[in-house]
Image 1 (cartoon, helix red, strand yellow):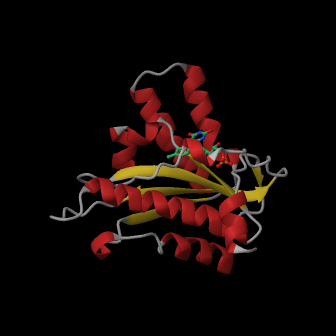
Image 2 (cartoon, rainbow, N blue to C red):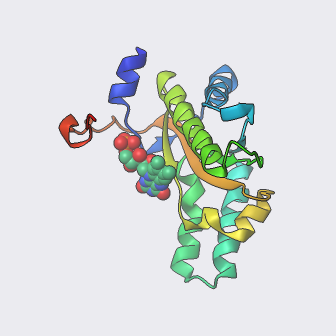
Length: 182
Ligand SMILES: Cc1cc2nc3c(=O)[nH]c(=O)nc-3n(C[C@H](O)[C@H](O)[C@H](O)COP(=O)(O)O)c2cc1C
């Protein structure tokens, strides 16, 4: 797939089924993440891959956070099923190194770029993805379960799999509403 075509026409797909990317394709996805812009070479990225039993473990982590907050059973039930919306979920963590010139924000942005790069690498190889978040990724229990320290944050959950439908049309956007010259 042409790089510009991918950049201009990429869509996310929420309906994802088996198989998940594996082998060289998965390695390419991770390597694309590792090419995110990175001020001062701090490599502020951790990628935790869940598949099969790993999806159950991810669900358990989210459910236990919701239960710790005495959430309604409907919320707990939703979280119990959430990770199974794709055959693979990559939890992307910004591993923040205190640095005089590189504030935590820049390191979060770098990890966000990694998510986008990985999603695009998936699409370029015939797979698809959907970047998800939710308030539970900020919960202390979830942070502890993933071993976050200091200013580390979970940047998102990248759901990956085989597209279960054709992508929606790219929305028309009027450039003049977004672009200014000074
Ligand atoms: C940081 C971040 C978190 C997101 N979290 C969610 C989410 O939890 N649920 C959701 O439906 N979409 C979420 N999205 C948006 C989708 O990933 C997707 O971009 C959106 O549905 C638009 O589709 P498109 O990428 O095809 O334009 C998130 C996007 C970003 C950048």
